[in-house]
Image (cartoon, rainbow, N blue to C red):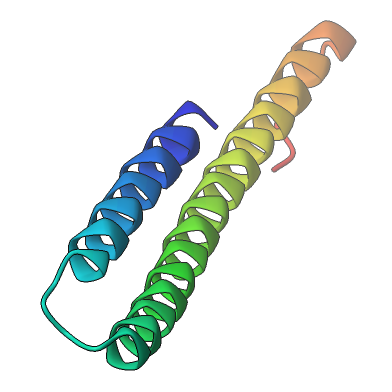
Length: 88
């Protein structure tokens, strides 16, 4: 999860910087608030999307490792039982 925290920190910093930049922009307050709301929604959507992609990627890697471990344990069990056949 370290990569997820780093990604979240970077995106949060970028969002805060964008919001501060818009607050100091020479536009009317109503326009600025609308722009801040739109950008924050955009950043939140992007952050959720990237976090979900990261979670899916980690889940696939976990499943892959779990499958390899199961295969290896079957091979070891077959050798311990003295079987020449290895079940996959």
